[in-house]
Length: 617
Picture 1: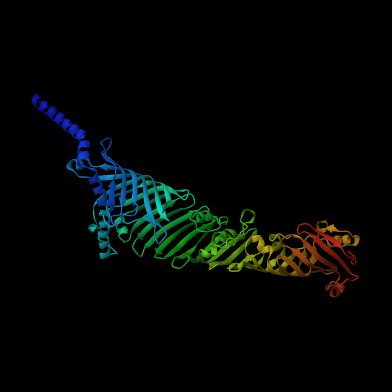
Picture 2: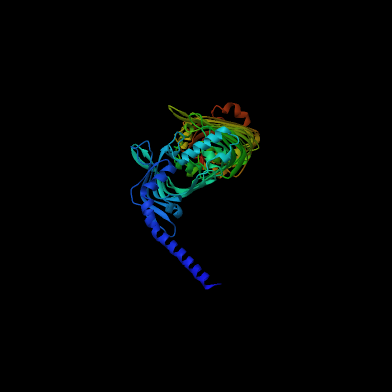
């Protein structure tokens, strides 16, 4: 190669290097003189539709990227100069195009808002959203897209959508505030994330994290046709929300028109529904025991109504399937539907949907009467197997209803204790005070199994029988319901036995005189032909009107009172031979009757003989 060509090549490369160096060296000067603060503010205003003001002088950086650093930036409504800015940012970093800057243009692909404050307003739907701009390229693009969608809502011509570029907006350590009584109240803090939207006719994504009501939250959203979505057309949408109290996701299609529409798969889960309601400030009593819940369902939502089909639901790890309907058109939300479970913990179900289930030692003493004013509920449910504490049930058919201060849970049919169970729990909030009513009808049951589940082990009729319980009392606390309840208890049993009663030993003790513990004569069982119990309950005290057990040789009877609150006993009784039964049921003394008094408590009763007229032989 001739040396002259080599020299010319070297000179050309050197000249290019010098030109590049001069451009790089003069770029900040060009930017500082031609890309002035007002030019940047104008371009940002043209895009956003807000009036953009930049108080500080721009600072231009060339390396590692060509960018402008702006301070004290505000975005305000053009038509309202009295209200505070919609967005205030201590610092905004804008990535600029170097070639556009040399031409005197401002073209940027990324804007970073550092420590922004975003002012939002509460919408009629309860959401907090910033004010909508009245102009700008984004607004005009949405208006253009709305015309495309209206021309053919079923299949809009996507080729006619605007193709303007947008870019990426990042935000760091921001916050959202809302005006309450003239003062800014922080809604969201530590707000960070980014929105990426390359062009108006392309896909868009949003990712953000922050702290809301003391909990860290993360939101991710994406759409393949965001401009169609904003214009009110039907477009794909995926959304996820994650926080310690709850997670939610949606994947399907949506429309953000006046008649909003969603169709897709939704999932929701919460380790404690009570905690979610507290976090959302739903007004539920802080101590109300509401367990975990998870829902996965096909969702179809229109304005004011949401349908859940093929719904898989789990309440405290009790899985079920069914369909639900949520209506938002009335004063309170209305939930109705059917659910079928293989296994179900009824206490968990009650605590999740009603304020009715007592929770024992770890639960609240106060009954949450506000729940019935927050929601209307009408659910039908079934379960192949269910538990209610120690009670095992099968083939359960039940309903749960909550409306206008009234909460009702009914088991219309269930198998338990070898027989059939029907029960109702009713909570009625009235102006004079709340009332709770409990009804139970147990038919053809095993009396021994029923008594064991109820915590009764002494003098229990073991055999097939029927039990009826009706209780009604004030509902301020769960203890007060039973302490002050009025109602009745009745039971009848056929042939069987009385458990834990050695009658010969009992009669021997009564002959010897002196009081003795019932436990001293509990090492036997007395066969009986039948038993009958009737008691009236007033203010938590049961008055036993009739309690008789008949065997081949004897009739045993009791009468008196038993207190629920103090667990105290004050009973009189007798053991009568059959030929004296007709004359002794009125309480009169006869030659073949052993009379006695029962005192002490439910757990430690004692017997004090009154007469010794019956032989234990």
